[in-house]
Image (cartoon, one colour):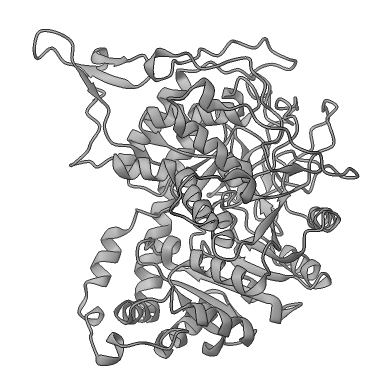
Length: 618
């Protein structure tokens, strides 16, 4: 197979056609802001921490782009490389398929034989939310100001979507493909339609933001609404309207234990006394951080990771994260992009210790968000053995365990292992938000054999519990194994697979590399070639170009990715919205010149469902 993006050798870089900002002010160019943000330290093996220098203020230069400024501030919790290099040159091997690796579930990827000299990579970083947040509110405590700043920064795009959410009937796109000659772009780059109603052009902007950034499954509302409306769901008795056992009603904990025993394939039945019920995994992370850590202690977490965990563990518990940086580069025959290894965990652990940061636990997400990686049983055991050596608690988030839609992808729960190296420090969480498309119902569960931990978390459930009526409905739903196995899961997997196939096809048509493992609700997309400079400022400008064109993706920086230019694209939506959303993605990218002609630093591959093979996306 030839090289991605052109023939071998460095290609001449075409200039990026910059789109003006609101008010006609041109996007800045040529400035290099690649140093780490204020309050963060980056680490290199064998070196001490390097003090960071203040980042130039975007607010002073572009006061009207306050959203950009706040989103860039959010990234200050993520240590950045001191200098991000351009995507390195690689060669791709012959066009051939490879068998799926049963250990990794994502295949073998060949190491490129030709690589430029590179700096030693940063392998870990310690987050410091105190350094990034500030507020001048006189009505709030210092802690309250930090909490408010999280809201102001982290929820910017999410709140924007909710204020102007696309709806086929109430807030649709008003520009149709049947009138291509009436489509125009204004000075901000936003598309509108000219209508000659009054004899002069009138602007009718595209309305309604397509949200391809929030990880929600919107494909099976018809199935869920029908099941939740059946008569067995409508039940009221006095105990459901009174204070419950804070662990959750016993009938629900018994049902959850049976449910997890079956779907996690545990070697022995799980016990109801080890189950705690809360209103979602966000509350679980918060509760576990509070009961396991002292103030300013930390958890290890592989990065990129689900960025909201930063808030979950910090807002109540004042617990930090130590990022175990994963690289997109493939370094050997049996490696894959963004692969977590025990060696990387060891280096991050040693680095944190050298900084005087006490690490109390390790967070694993399986299947991984945003990568979609599925850990093999061997990998899980390796990570758990590592944690045991350091007496670390391990929190395993398995919220996507039933959203593995490719037949070739084999999922193994940590609860399926024949033995746990340290069962008293292994805690598993699951929720219905993703697998059952019920993110608004707020149901989550913890399974821990450590009764001290379970009791401490249960004590916090008085602030995070579910109503008795919802607990009854959840028990009814989880015990309906026939409906789950014969109706819901097959149809949900088929719809996820179809939606994934459509979006991946669109990305291939655009020549965009992406990482996809056949699990989860999202695709990890490589847009590095659209950045004129490999900086997170340029990544955020591209994010704003998408948002200006009424489509929201999630930028890699919000996931703690250390390489600028990666985005998470959620595909678990209905076909009409996906179609409009991908049209808008295409419009943004086709309006930009490709500025990096060399292929990315790894072979990005996707499972081929029909054969169980992998194909290189080029």
